[in-house]
Image (cartoon, rainbow, N blue to C red; front, top):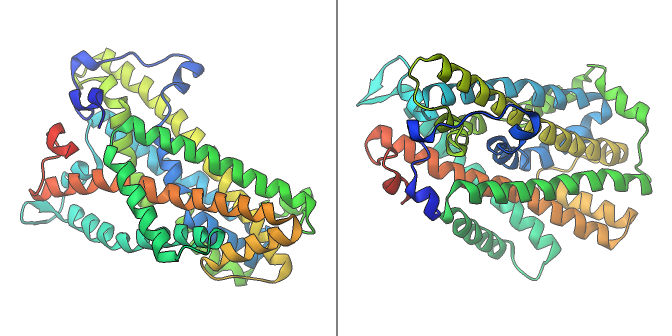
Length: 368
């Protein structure tokens, strides 16, 4: 954590930290950030692998599933963000306040979250393996396990800095990189045998789904857009950005209500910009699967999709295209690893505080 953040408790609401919300569109843009961090987490293996697989199985006809998934889930994210601004509390503290039975002094909801999150660590290992595999395809002289070790070490070093501004800046850089990558991949299709027409693209907006694609469509709907994990971590980024801190302690006054509404409008814009980015990116991966793999009748399994697409780009465009594709795939997968680990340091510390094993409220101990 940097010196400025160490001196200030980013989770505390004090009268001295109150700041008027920006009243203009351009003024609000200066305060975007929490959802951009979430976007770096959202666009990962699910989008690169499962979305592409859905396109390979269904063609363009199921594009609407991806769009609906991205559009509708953001509503739940906004409610979590509004609660953080209103109450000034984190998700795990909110879970602790839910009604229901306790085990010891901890609510059932916190125990359920801890169990689910602990199991999710296996998923992080799989994504880390995907990064290592993409790097191994590009540089086969280094073994997959060696790439995995180096990637894990790099992530630990980056996350150890910890502070919000650092996480936000890296996330924005990753978003810029993978957004450029996905757009470039789709544009390159125009110079290959897999170019598609506008009519084919529009056919994916007719809300029709072939029976053989229903299973994959449901899986893609579940893992595209913001997930329960990203929704749970979103309030932490909102609090660290300052939305609740700038609103100030809830004294019930008309001024507090006005400030709260103003900062909630900032949060809405933050979430909307993020939704546009990850929707366009996710749709682009789907188009790659529909335009290339569906036409070839190929449905690669898991991370074999990386090998297949990189090979097809090399055949159609040239060896440089494979380098571009693999570099982009590494960025997409690594963005999830990086933000997921940064988020986990916060949520696990908060959950352990509810159990009594840590003290999330003390900024010094929280930083450790």
